[in-house]
Length: 64
Image (tube, helix red, strand yellow):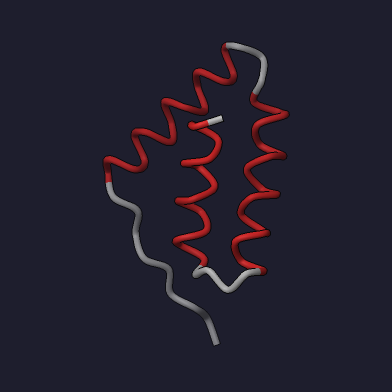
């Protein structure tokens, strides 16, 4: 069975891209990407939905 994912809002996609580009310019994207995946996995392991885990992980990257 293939799970359907919701589509992220345009606002979320724009914010995510801005954060990623800034971190790339600063030379910190590699480290941030690893952190983001660790947060996402921890969220999923705790029972959070896939979409919520992705959004929360990006929020944490931006916050940190």
